Length: 248
Image 1 (cartoon, rainbow, N blue to C red):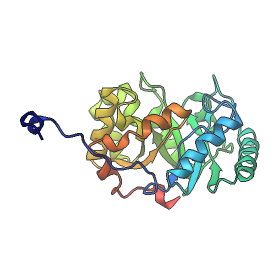
Image 2: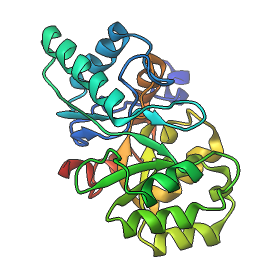
Image 3: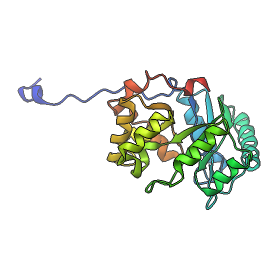
Image 4: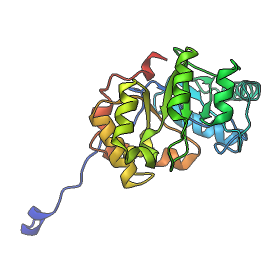
């Protein structure tokens, strides 16, 4: 070893990436052709095979239901799920596949809840909901209240990505006081979306506000980036959290 070698920075060694600690991914878009996720059955099978290899025992895939863009129904999703299960079985991929939905919170969704229409839930009557990323919906708290009154347990998808929430400590406190369940995207902790999103996601983890993690997998790029997660300073911490994923 030469004298200058003493000053060379040693390459960092990271853990291997895996999701066996998570057990269940409850947020993804893997039913092909019905939203902005997987475009084909071939793509879905490739993604699911990789996710199975990460150590997951179950995937609960959650297509968008948005009145303006993705007008999916429970029937459409159930049919897509059956096709997907059949293809997964034929490929010999050993993983359980279920489906729910990611509901966009707007007036039409609110009326659906008030009218007692069927919605797709999973686990302990959990329902995955999302909002727009920039502006706080005026009816956010009203919809959450109506969901709870109807017996549902709302999970707010990727709160770390909502710009209005990042800048509103009062609203964040209000949501946590109401014990709203937060689901953070694993990708957010890699910096995939942006540094502010990563920083807010890190803070939610550090404060113990995260009850679910999800891949929110749409395509292969998501999984490629997710495999960099061991570089996150929080990787060891998130694997030790008391998450509700493992109960699903």
